[in-house]
Length: 411
Image (tube, rainbow, N blue to C red):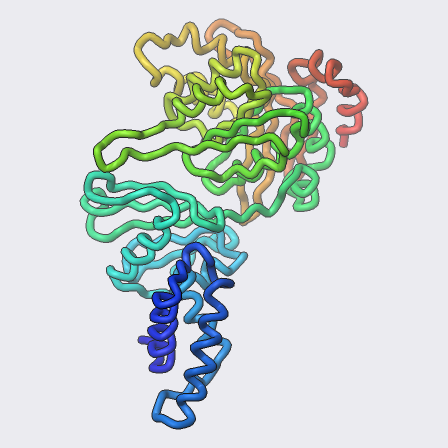
């Protein structure tokens, strides 16, 4: 229940926002803060000569009003908490969060209308819609967080809302080393692999850090390269001067205009890329990515898998979804020749780390793609196995002394 003063101040701020023609979604909390302060000053002056409720804690009330008018109300404190990675709503009285790898039921209680109002507010700047004909939605929030919503009758009763916060704790492979997610020798090898144009797939489970790793690998790309990224929703942040980022699009109200990931990959090839990044492959778009990589265009992607070998298996099977004319006989050698490295991540006890780096040699053994394990985790340490990576000639062409690099990786 709102404190009396909170309700009055909030309503007066909303009225002032309407009169001034301010859009809180555009100006954010900073743009609304001055209006809140203006209302609070006026409120305090009027309270001296009236029976208006007293404000017990002005700073706390100011924060609450800002959260409600310019933020996401009761959820804003969870979004502001850096220890929280994800928030989800199973029902008005069941708001959960993931903190330090554990699921926690919060004390936030909403009404059905508040949930719908919050979702509508989050979708306002995304251009995406949610209704009975389109009961799912994926969107990127202003702060980069990812929103997913499902509504009845797809869900049993309540709206199901997930907000995966965009917490990019590392922007480069060096920062992953400082966070102890990756040893220095493995980081130097991966940086060299990116510079040499090897094709890399990052695998792992949910919240294992695939997007962060992909961002860190992208930071090792030469600034002279033109990079095109393709994603379902914007998550990648490539710190390079020549980057074009594209995301998918839903059907419009007439049931037309959808742009899927396959289309984005095809269009990306027409944009003179030096390298292509696909946020995550889940379905038949894996076929289009393989075709692009097989044409000699370097690229990187991520894939949901429980091991590096499982990721390789999925890269062989997912392209078969592209159509009946796509055969296993075509896909198997194409994967073998197109994927060079698989970097597998996992999460244990709330800590993300690199568990395995697998090399794909490009050769087939009957119906099996030949692989070589390059870095394996023993206990808490990721160690070089002593094996040579694939495509050694590319390292030489890039001016990299692979032998010296790998010898430095012996631990």
